[in-house]
Image (cartoon, rainbow, N blue to C red; front, side, top):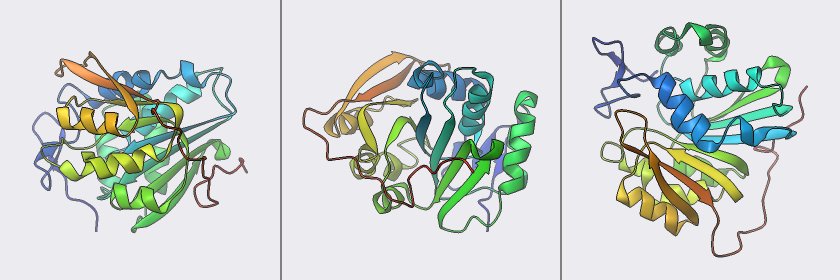
Length: 248
């Protein structure tokens, strides 16, 4: 059964489970572009790369994915393959997903393509293919910490998203962020909208260099981080289940 969603008078989706909005009341599109895409140095950082992997915690309505996919399409220096990996414990319905993105007409074709494959999302790993397999979306349906510890992947950028640490502390705690750090290479960039002290401290403990930056309204500050641990990370592990396949 899909996650129930309430719709506020201003059209913003609201989660009864967590008592929180899915995105900023000033619009999720600006947040997706400025906090996450630009916060991880994209699209400049992927220029000329054969492939680029992004990990997101909290897929929600897929707005961060759609904005990233649109940026990839528009970039002549884009990588040959874009692999977007996201965790989501409570997937919304296909109808709600399309409703949440319909206010952004520039994303309409991509949102429709996502909607058309948005079915059968039982707990586990799901692989969706777009643009003739040059864009891959891997969905881990389940608890972020548990799902990431079951997989083995290495990513180039991280969108740390989800409901606020006050509403959903498990998604931001030290154990979850350790699972996220396991997916990093040295130099992996991370962006998030929260500057909660507990999150900053946990990221630092996991090997990230953390910086506060000017925020996207209504947030005064956002957070950027780069994975540069003082210790030598374990050798990169890559399993068949999580490795990026070549386009079909």
